[in-house]
Every structure is written in structure tokens, then in C-alpha cells.
Length: 362
Image 1: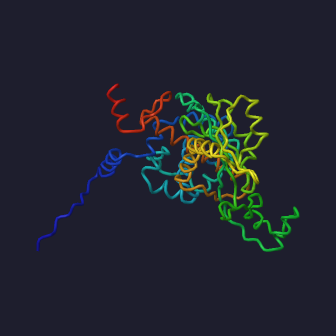
Image 2: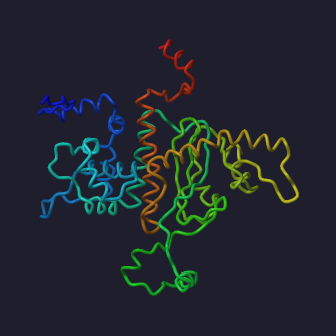
Image 3: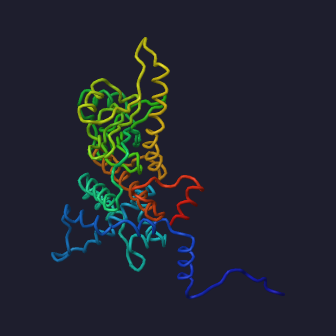
């Protein structure tokens, strides 16, 4: 009987062959690793968080750069600590990105969780600012004006009975055990948008219109008005002076403030009771919307990184998660720009004809 031939080939160098094939196909994580200075980000974290070196006993800590890369990877794909540990054991691309391809052991779920807890809001903010500093180093300054908006970030819903809801409304803590209290998110709030109920938090951002990077962020709860953090996210360093927002931000006081600060009012107009918008105002709103949409692209980019959902309990941890969302979005976008050679001072080509023209000139 003739044995059928098989396409499978077995070799001692099979892993090297697969790695070569992965490089040919293209590893998106290596694009980020090539262009983001994780060593500099780790230095910022080390300056903020004191970490043991093992000289006083106990298990030595993993290198800070390794742990920062793990937190970035965790947010890029919206993974839990348990899944992050498993994927580090299973995926060669994750091991390579986190500098663990030759390591016999990888950080477990508890190590990842403890590092994230020690990082806290201050550490996440330092990472966001560190990425922003790398944007400036490559010439991607905030230019062309800015678009400001807020997006809802859902959190796990709380199943409360009537007595618990009444106690919280009165400012009292319900009769919960210590274990129950740790699992109850009393900071997140409810709101409705487009007829749909949402429980969680809110992320407000300012995005520069030239390059689409998130420049400033603020966090709050879902029930807060979109304009609540307007002053906090207004980017005073953007070289463009136009400020684009939707109708939720429009107010006479805010327009006067922008005028005093030297900004150009590009907020969409809102109809008043008995005073519908004129045709001129409607056309203006459409022009503003075409530029304001830049901030929606940033929110879509965050949603594509595994979604905007946070699995944490409490305002502080949610703030860390949302800050890391913005930092990882900027990392991914910066790496893509540098990989494609997008010029920081000229508008990138948008059509095939423009690409051919720029290539010919080069």
C-alpha cells in the first residue's frame, strides 16, 4: 500500500522558519516596538515608583520595561490579567514584544495586577505624557486646531435591590460585607444616550486636527455633562486657534471665554426654543462637523483596540484604564505614521495620484 504524501515537514529549525515567515507577513506589534522608546517610558515609571532590587530578600522584580510593555499589550487587546498570563505563555509574538522570547518564566496574573495597582493614576498619566513627549520629539506637535468631545466608557453593571439604591442615594453604605463592598462600584453612574441606558464612566479628550493625536484627557462619570471637563481638556499649546465641538458644548459663557483666550469659536450652534437655526447656521454646523469628526476617529481607534469597556471597580482604576487607552492609541498611531513615513509638517497623501506624485518628487 502506497503511503500518501504529506505537506507537513518536520525540522529542528522549525521555530526559526516560522519566525522568518512571521517577519515576512508582518507583525504589527513589532511596528510599535521599533518606533516607541519603551526604555524612556520605563525610566519615567522608575522615577515615580520605587521598586525593590531583591537585595533585601524576596523574589527580584521583573524589569520595568518588560512590565510596561505587558500593560501596553494588555490594553491594546483589552485582555484580563489571567488572559495576559496565558497569552504570554502561548503566543510567540507576545513573548517577542515583551522581551520574553528566551525567558524560562513570565510574569503571572498576580504580578501583572500588582504592577498595575502600583502604577496607579499618576503612573498612567506619566506614561501618557511620555508618549506625548515622543510625539513632539518626532515633530508631531499639536497643530491645525483641536476637536473636543466626550465618549461613554461602560463598566460592569451593578445589580442592586431597592434598599441598596435608597441607601446609596442618601449617601449611606448599604449593609454589605467586606467582600461585597470590594465588588461594588459606587463611583460609576447611569445615563441615557440615544435612548440607550449606559452605566460607567466618561472620557473627554482634545484631538489635534492636523495629525489626529489625543493631546489632553479628563475622566468623569457617565452622568456628567459632556461640557463638564471642557476647561480641563482645552489644549492651550495647539498652534491652531480653532476649537471644534458639537452642540452640547455651545454656550454664551464658553464662547466669551474662547474669545478672551484668543481662540476661534468653531462650536456648532444649537437651536433655542422658538428660534430654529437659520440656513446659514445649518451650513456652518455642517462645516464644523466635517472637522469635528476627527475626534470620532480617535474614539473609533480606541474601540478597535478591544473596545472601550472597563473591567475595573472604582473611579481611580477606571481612570487608569481610560488613560492607558489614550496612551496606547497615540502609541499605535505614532508607530504607524513613522512606519509609513508620514511627514510631520505636511499633509499626508490621501489619494493614489498624490502618492505617485510624492514618490516621483522623492
